[in-house]
Length: 407
Ligand code: UD1
Image 1: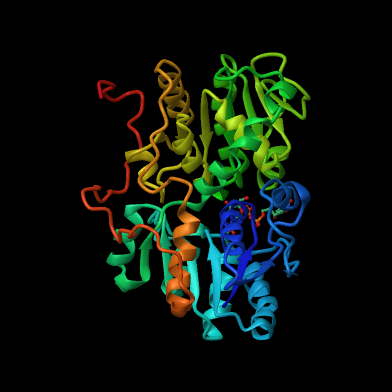
Image 2: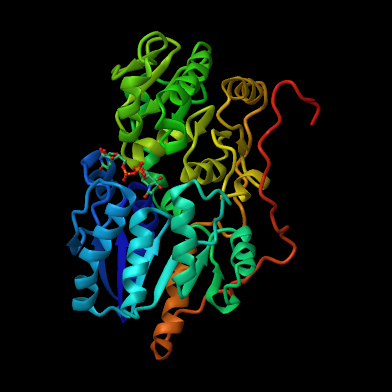
């Protein structure tokens, strides 16, 4: 049985790594890895292959940067002949980036079944490019592997056949757990001169937060205020760095490319590799972010997370985990940070099935369906839906400092 897996951008790499490892354990599976090259430089792609021990891709499409239509079209054009040549039994795509949607479309049009890992997540915000990618990918996928109960409900509400939906847990957490020994040994805190629980970590890259200099400047003003009482480490995404130079925010309170933390301030760094970044997050007092994956990682690690967005497609991180939606208003960001700093540090409480074994479940299901004679390993039955686990409502953005604070 041949499975062709496609990755393209940074958040894909931690999702494919545990699947590649699991597939290697089964001689019945012949695995082909395609890297679209949506992310191409060492800081955004190359280092992640090393850190996560992902085998070198069999095919690199070298698509690079461009508009959404350009990236999507180039991935489809360049992947089509690869699929025709390889004739896989299945194409596996992960996450919600342009490469995910493009690869799913290229495969179904050649009548190759598609598995979508991380299916069903919905922010219900169609201004987000990722939401479009999620909706389109799920509409054409044959196997929909879901991380949390809300995803099952969303897919059922969209009329997806329930026999295609599998609640299996979260492959991101598989990566986090599998590499725990390695990231625990990272010396990033010592290198930066940081003490555990005495700093915050920030990431920002959503177009709605970082593409307009004025919006980014207002968020950075809030971070600088927080940075007066707690050093803030801010690995800067290339998209964000482009706008930063025009935002007028660099200077007082925002230091770029300092080699170590010497005072309370916001420290902008280059993007970090996976192991150093997770080590930094695991030792933080809190995280402020607009990343989807980081909402999940902080929930698994028990680190308070303030999400600089109005919505999340990962509601279990709010209902079950450490995540709170604060939006992009500077006053609200500062107010909610002060609340976190005044509260005791939480204990990790991972959502159901976020146990480091999601990729085993996925591969076992694929073997059972695609190679029924092959003697697929028997795992405990997988619930299609978790009985007694409340179907989540889209979480509301937190009330601001002017409203009642007694909850
Ligand atoms: C993409 C994904 C987003 C994901 C994010 C993680 C889509 C629609 N968006 O957004 O879901 O959370 O990746 O990083 O697929 N660049 C580099 N080096 C690289 C890659 C990009 O410098 O290796 C620069 C380019 O100038 C590019 C910009 O970053 O214009 C943005 O890259 P792009 O792939 O368009 O989207 P992201 O914002 O990274």
